[in-house]
Length: 368
Image (cartoon, rainbow, N blue to C red; front, side):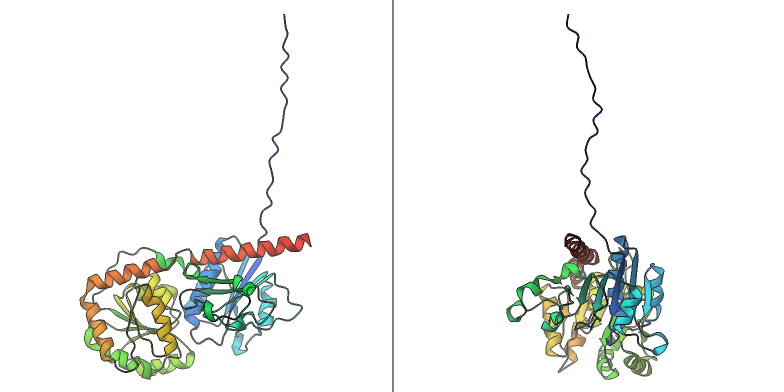
């Protein structure tokens, strides 16, 4: 007779503990006060800041000029607003970096601002509208963000080192847009409600012929979304307050409502184009310069807009507006192609890459 002794061993399964990628405690986005299209830039900066908040970053700040209703929107989203010009006195970039004590700094500017040697940032990235060798003029620059079609680098003519280009994040999948612009809306806009969108240093002389072309074609109030400098805003108010509704630094909800309620937008090429096409609005772009025409061609290749250069005659613009107002199917086609152009996760895609780079930098520093 055999006796079998069963021994139960209390074995603890060894589980591999994977080390979590380190996250920055603080992120700061700074917008150069020299830009004349601050509202559109604040919208873009806000989209990036919110994506960092959703990634569980403890402290996120956005440094920019006071920007009407948009300033309240920053703080409402648990993002710290740093006024880059408190009481009219500009803060230096170094002062702002010190105040934020950020591990990741993103600077929206054309060339790298000077950083004092004692300022420690784990990752310093530039957010720009076009590629230039000057973006990597400083060895403090860790990455350049060039989101969207406007910023597509001309690889054939770039003289920068390959290592620099490897640090260039560019393309439509990285365009930062707030979630609200992609939300579904069942509201059908009025068949003749038009919006004119301008940015930068737009003057009354630039807008007058466009308004002359638009007025006979609509009975609805004409709205002008003006992402312009203070000086340009004052000029536009003086010239057009009586016959058009000017939207200068409106609240985010008023801005989105104005875009949502329009059936057709006439716009100069600028940063706010991305907001318009994200909401699926048919857009007629009105370039004036060779650079603007080149920008428009990039959108035109995607069949997402109509392009009507107006350097010589405004008759073509009037014909384009009239044709699209009468052709609902063509507007619907442009609208769908516009929506398909952008990735709704553009902000998240950008933040994911930056957080991965930050983690790599931190892990390498631990090894060293």
